Length: 166
Image (cartoon, rainbow, N blue to C red; front, side, top):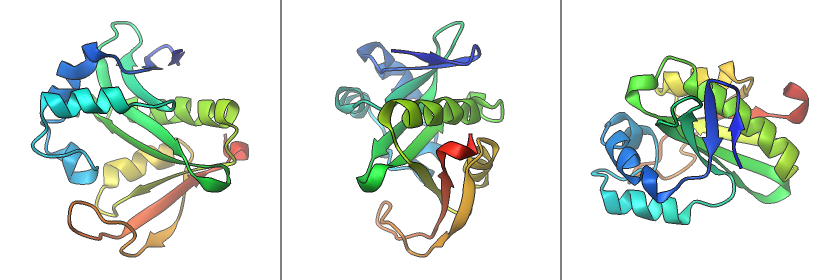
């Protein structure tokens, strides 16, 4: 199964993605804002690929198949899906994450039958907030000390998207 907008595509991860994932996750900005471990090893990438479930996708260049990032939705209770994503440093600012988020959102509503999608970003992660807003997500508020992230409990902005927002 693959989703595409002509520029990027979302497809399941394969073992062939391990070297590219490992290389991308050396960028300190990825573990800074996500649960990606640091340092990141090839074994971490292999485990990530082997645990990928329905709703976890490699973001790739639609023409070349080059790995650009990762995006996924995890269904929660009450037909809610929680989204997370990262993209390689070299492709940031080109709309890759926004395009992937739009593709994933449409797929999640249609295929998984979710009623709400949500994602969280730390207030200082301005780039991720822009991605969410550019994909049509609405900021709902500040969640104080919302979740543990690598030994700390930062605040997070909550963003949501409903089917009628598409």
